[in-house]
Length: 426
Image (cartoon, rainbow, N blue to C red):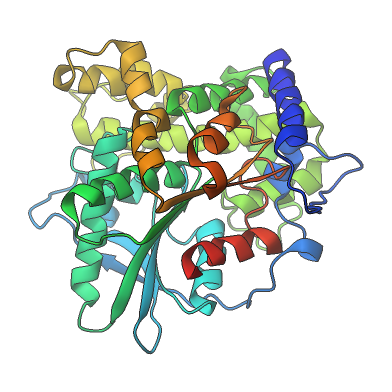
């Protein structure tokens, strides 16, 4: 917890430096504010944007690779799922990219979709390239996390969706946004579009992106160390957590591991900061284990499932998922991701490879292009000490830094939603 405490203190210092001149009211549950609580609880109703309850988006599927044969265990993911909402007349279109391990219809993309749609935009919501359905159906090599390769995969998806609906919808301009890893992806997608000019994005908004992917995944993996008994006790902790949360859920048949899960877990457990870090660590560990298992089976890499084992649609992941649950994003980077891509980048060692996968690699582009803006929080828990300074230094007044909100906790705040819309409206 010493490093977590240092991160929190750094965030508090950043609050004093980057606080906006106008008061920013962001209450959270509990007697004292913490960036961990803000991350888990999110935006309370009294300061949330006034958005319609009804989700305007419809779900659909699309085949990205015509000749792709997916492994039997993933037969249900052969096509990519996405969601969209069209205006009745010509309008600009906003592509939204979900965060780490999140789907197109997750809480945050749905709320963003409501905001943009009711502001007059067409919207298309895309799952994270780290989400199982995307890895199986839309990733060219199914080894996600490579900033440039993921951007190509997302761009291909955008083009396919546009082609499918071109007779139905009239688009005047294109915009792109994303939160967390999706914000990071949006930066590289926009850079790719400068070269290909298929969309000529008018604006891009990066919401709470990491600066260095490796630094952020290291911080998230360390949060799992707050699990009672450590990361090796993940399965027992998760089971007890699910039992506890199920007591306060109205529906008893399933519990989705999303923002609502974290909120209910918070109310049920009334956790302190260490337990909050454990909750966040659990959520991201589930994302990493799903990614690792999916990518390993598709590529027969032998990381958790022996390469000579053929999984079928009737095979149970069983013990393999027990192994995957012990592995974090940094394990994936060192044991699978880096060795897989090393032959394509023989000039880079591990440190050089990690440096290539961060926003600093695009710094000159950010400074020369006024089409990219950033919305971030001074106390974001996935940023290493000092990383928040990157955004005002590089983006200048195109960086909107809120004094608090944790990691994406304030995305539904009325001020944040108004800013998101104003970036694209203006």
